[in-house]
Each structure stands twice: as C-alpha cells, then as structure tokens.
Amino acid sequence: MSNISVIGTGSYVPNNIITNDFLSTIVDTSDEWIRTRTGILERRISKGENTIYMATESAKEAIKNANIEANDLDLIIVATLTPDNFMPSTACSVQKEIGAINALCFDISAACSGFIYGLEIACSMLKNSFRNKALIIGAENLSKIVDWEDRNTCVLFGDGAGAAILSKTKEEGILEFHSGSNGLKGEHLTCGVLKANNTPNKNDRLEKNNFIKMNGKEIFRFAVGAMNETICNIQEKTKWDLNEVKYIISHQANSRIIEYTAKKLNTEKDKFYMNLDKYGNTSAASIPIALDEMNKRGLLNKQDKIILVGFGGGLTFGGVAIVWSI
Image (cartoon, rainbow, N blue to C red; front, side, top):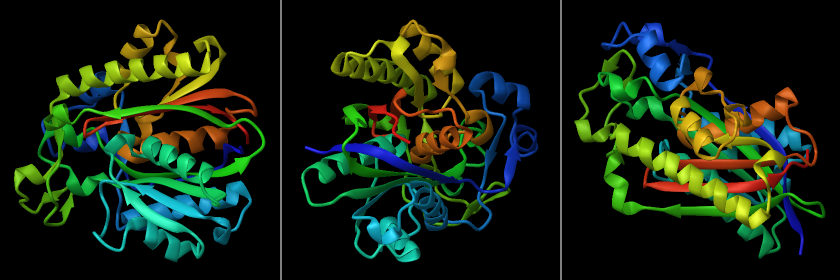
C-alpha cells in the first residue's frame, strides 16, 4: 500500500497587526498582563479578508510549494469554525477560486483540532480510494466572533489560514494518529451563532452567547492533559524516543500550556515550535501556519521526525507523527 506524505505547505495572515498596547486602549489590560500570561505580543486581524480569501491564498501557496497544478487535487478539506456561508462550503468556494475541478470538497468543524482531524480524514480517504492528492486547510476569521469588551478572550485570538498538500508516495511520511473528543466538557469553550458584523473597535451588540466564551482554568487543565496523552500515545505507536523528534508543532494557544506540557514530558521547551507571540491563537489555522513558517525558514529537513498536536473546542484533541519528506 502507498504511503502518504506532506509535499507542500502554504499560509496567509492579514497585514493588519493589533498589538497588546492597542488592546490596552479598548479593554482594561496591558502588554505586561497579556505577555506574561499568554506569551502573545501581537495578532493579525483581517481588514476585509474573509475566510474564503485567506483559505484560497494559503492554498495557492501550498500548490506552488508542492509544484503541482490545482487540477491535480482529488480532495479539498477545510477546517473552520468561522465559515463565510453555510453553503456553499468554504472548500467548494476555494475549489472555484483555484480551479481544482477534479476535487471532492467539504468542510469540517473541530475548532483548534480541525487541521489534525482533516489530515486524518484525508489520509484515510487517500489510502482507501483512487484519490492521490489532497489539500487540507485550516482557516479562521476569529475576530468576527470575539467579544472585544472581554479582556479574558479578546487578547488571545487572531485571523489567518494555513494549508498542506498530501500525496501518495513510496517514501515514509505520515505514520500514526491519535485523536479523540470529550463532549462532556464542551461547555468550557463555546460560541453561539453569529448574527451581526463585529470589529475590534465596535461591537454590534451581539447577544453574549454568540461570542467565544472560555473557562480558562478548565481548558488549561484539559490542554496539558490531552497534549501529554496524545504525544505519549504517538510515541508508543511509533516507538520514537522524544530525543529522536526534531520538533513538536502544537496548537498555538498559550505559552504556559506548552511549558507545562514540556515539563510533564520531561523534555526541553525548545522542542516545541512557537510563533504565537506574532499571531496569537488562530484556532484550526495555527498548526498549518506554524508548519509552513518552519518549511519556509528551512527548519525541517528530509527524514526529520516531527509530531503535530492540537486541542480545542468540543472538546477535541489529536496528533500525528510525520517523517518530513520535502
């Protein structure tokens, strides 16, 4: 049976930067308060770019990086909790924009774990069908569902999109997954149905349950436990020692979560790649944005062993072991 490998990556983030100092002018907070509790210094907030646009731009980059044509794609999966429309799906809209006429397209909603879920679904579909190449995108326009009067949440999130292209190959690539859900704890991270426009400078008086609401302590506890469980499970399946792993690319939510997870795993924090200081929490987009950034910076070499791991609303979690092949 063919193996599945990552053959290309791409990403897009808005040019508009919102700093901690700016947020201190609209809510009772400060750069020091945000930085010491989250590790975030700034985030990108869309100015007219919608989810489809950001997803499309990341897809174009990934296609170019993979050195393929859009009509080579057999499958497009978009992970998002901020679609522009209920229908057509974001994936179908991306298909139209890039001209991927041969692709089966659909969206999934698994919050910050969405990209990992998308990878697992795509791998299963490629292995068990005639399909050869898949585009998986994580894209979020979180600024439209953030309560810009709530200092506990508005400081955390940013907008952006990241993408990866998978292909059947002969060489070793994507090896093992570990994923799951815990709906019993879903009330700790919620967001209702969006009913109006929303910007950093002005709320259109949405009902409060339509914004992101989070029980920070419970999510912190869940995140550290889920990341530790996922990484240990993947180690057991692959027989990898953490010393063999070049990088762990986790969901970029909070630097403290990453620090505590590193301690539980008895490994150095530097093994975890972090870029949340620049982008904040971009939900389903955070892992593929980080992966593309690492690819562009030349931090990953062929045959490097890496682990991607995510957690988020649902509650959901997941991870994957990959031997890098670009």
